[in-house]
Image (cartoon, rainbow, N blue to C red; front, side, top):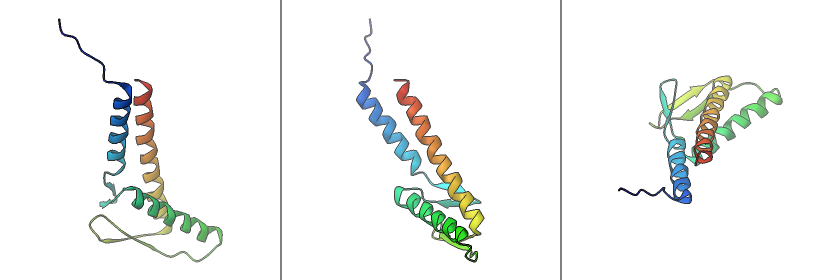
Length: 107
């Protein structure tokens, strides 16, 4: 008779958290360009998006946005394109978090 033991929940939760962190930091591809998605990069992308929204709210002239991809290539975005990029990146993060929450709930 083979006896198996269920992995303790705290260890399993830490594995889920580690997998989630790894997924969040996997490069994100947008319009053929790979972008870094580590915590600092995500914060910088969201800060740039907020600056664009503030400029729009203040009716300042629109200017193209330059952002460097994971290959250190400058990528030019219109303000609207950059907001769409930031939005889809945030949605991706939310999907990753929600999947990890569902997995934890099933323990």
